[in-house]
Figure 1 (cartoon, helix red, strand yellow):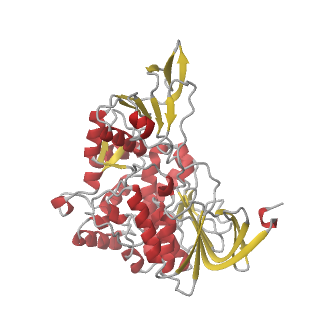
Figure 2 (spheres, one colour):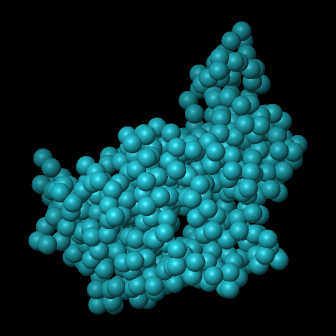
Figure 3 (cartoon, helix red, strand yellow):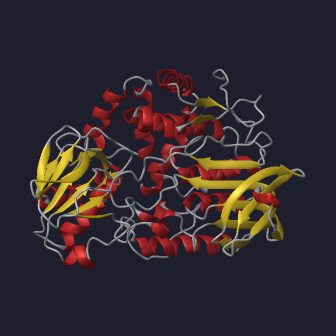
Length: 502
């Protein structure tokens, strides 16, 4: 028996159904509110208990990695009252996301359905039939004129790593606050597994709250980050002596040809990066300050450039087994903190970003049109309501598959993707759409500088289009991944590629 054959106790109707109340979903809601009125209804569905997406579940000591004003829905201003460089806490972010929803609710009617689990969708009567499971287990059907599935990156809480030895305690940032409780009260060594941003957050939180604690990092291949001081300079450097973020992106895309990711990594790391480990082979757009980096580097007891396989008992003691074949002793009672895998993008089935009829927009990593899901929620929703979702020949990128096949090439491909697609969007949407995008990192800079950057984009965005398209096509052919325009001949949206379009 299919889910739609089960007992259904309620059928709703709406002009738009949005699945996902995280940042991507809120930006979709903001954009939709610019096209719908108070008399029209949006139903917002989320499996969590409240608005906030991954921020509802994430570890308690997380902070924003960017200045907070550009982490928002549309151009909704924060009410925090802190200086723009302040890195908001988890609770402050959740409060702002609730504020965004409240502000959107002043423009359009939003019916919130928390604890609802999306099950399926299908075309029906010129719109979309959406089937969900309610918190009571019953099946609910929503008949919507349009549907936006704002899945985003789908970050989930991390489980502790399974290890063979009972002599150590395995946890994750999502199962305990490393600053408090048993791990906070303990004096046993800590081994942080992973070298990405979660590992840096965890090391910084431990070393700041418990100076002198033995903290070790098993960093895998190492990671480099964008330096916050270089990306978001303060004082006089906001006016002179720094590079506008849009200018950096344009420069990166001019340099990248789809084959030279190693050269790009060296250039970017030298010009804009910071790193902790002696090797730093990974880069996934994370941001870290030089101050945070020094605090972590000065406090760590040891950095192991290898990957953990297991911790086993051998000769009456715990021993760490590493991928290289090396081993090292581990003190009884040590804490193993799993900080790996948050951005591995999971294993999700392919779905095109747009259905063939343009009634369904899917914001996710298997068919990405932009580098950040918040941007995709904002701009793609505007395209949908302008009835151009299936008309503009955007490129889609299967980030999940490219990450598996070549992690090093992914960030530079993402920048090329967004530069190419933004240019096409600019030619097909009102300027007001761009003016209202508060996500734009150029807003960190004073008005004259960011205005000059916007004018430069307007005048030059078509010049590099052929190079960007050639770059993306090269990535597609090198790695045999989905990276091209949606097929207009496919009933399901896109399972084959068109040739490059002009």
